[in-house]
Structures are given as C-alpha cells and as structure tokens.
Length: 206
Image 1: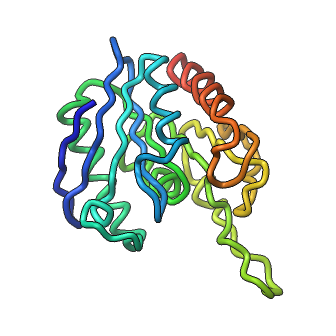
Image 2 (image 1 turned 90 degrees about the horizontal axis):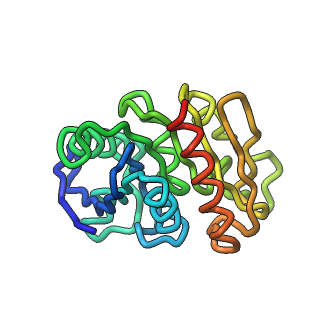
Image 3 (image 1 turned 180 degrees about the vertical axis):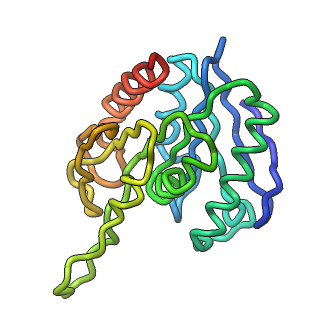
C-alpha cells in the first residue's frame, strides 16, 4: 500500500493505493460524510477487488485531509473527485478502466460524476436514499433516487436491511445486494465482499 497527495480545485486530497497483481481494472472509492477511509466496508471492498485482480484506491476528500469533519458542499466534493480520478487515470492507474464508488456520501459523489470520470461501473455502499427522517416530521423525506437513475453504467448498491436511510429499488443495470445490518454495513462483511466480487466479475466480463 502507498499514499499520494493530489491537488484539486478545493485543496489537497489523499489517495491510498492498494495495487492488485496483474490488475485488469481499478476500483476508486470515497468515504462517507463524517467518516474516513478506514470504514470496514470500504476496506472489505478493496479486499474483494484485489482478489478479482482489481486494484483498489481509497480517497480522502480535501476537507478530511485538512482535518475537518463537516463535509464540503456537493459541488466541491464532485470537483475534487473528478480531479482525483483524472490524476489517477493519467498516472498510477494509467491504462486501467476505472470503476468508481464509495460509501454513503461518497457513493452519491460517484453517481453524480460517473459520466465525467468515465466510470465503467459504480459501486455504492450504503447509498443514503433519503435524509434521516426528522422526529415529528409529517412529510416523507425527499428521495435521492434520481442520482442513481442518472447513472448510465452498471451500478451495484450494497445496502443493510435495516438501513434507516432507505432501500433503493432494483432496476435495469442496477443490482441491489441486501445484507444483514444497518447503514454501517458491519453486520456481514463476508456477504458484502461476495456481492462485490460477483458484480465485478460481471462488469469486467461484459
């Protein structure tokens, strides 16, 4: 594993590279809004990718590298992500097709930027389909399904059966893997890895 720092329009990002032997693709993943790249499901995803000869990269957004816990605005997250993917594609991941993704907020970023990054597919870990319902609210929370539906490449959503942020529906080109647990996806990491490995094989064999 190695680390590189990448300059973006909104500060310095950090990429943690986990190369696979004889890689045939690369999986680039972002973290959740308040978490980091050490999240267990992100680590499991990289482990699964490496088994399938896919290099893994875990990316820290500039606000996290700068020591802030509050997430940057969406437009800044997206711009920084696009810059990181471009740098990786031109450098350490040159010649490898990119699959992008992330957990929670990072999954949303990957969906919104899939076309701009030229992603071959998008992996969403614990996609937050809706904001957490507010206590006493009478109206249903707004849906973020549009971000998933705007992606034109294959999508895998790995979602905990008890995720309070909702369960996205399956659709043509979009696979939903329901696993035990909640939004943290810590309940059954083996099933998380199995779902990712099976999906990566399908995407890369298309």
